[in-house]
Image (cartoon, rainbow, N blue to C red; front, side):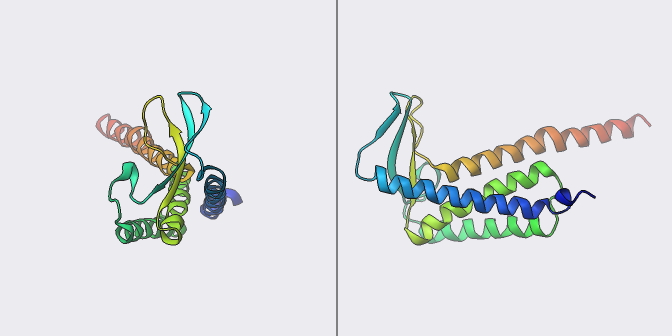
Length: 168
């Protein structure tokens, strides 16, 4: 077996650590350069950098529920790490998806634990989307990858298996 494939779960966790580092760097830069200004347009009317201290979850839900958010996020991340290290996730795509979710989840968890809020700074203005951060992107991309996997890859495998069984 290829050594990379055999130890891919560890490589994915290392990549998650790198993502956590990048997330924290971006948030540090946002605090240093954006917290004193209202907003910094990158593409006028389309994309701004806007500093926001989010004390809730996605779209501002669960405002002020720090311990609930820390608990749920911590348990979810711990469960995903255990599944990854136990070898329960065999699909390369699912491993990377879980790695993205772990990296993004821990990035925001660090903020909640040590700052009491999550630092957001990416503001897509042309669709009036809530302000978000790099960690949020990681979680969303990982989640989309999981949905795609189960709808189009795993779902197709099951359909193909049923087709083969009925044709026998």
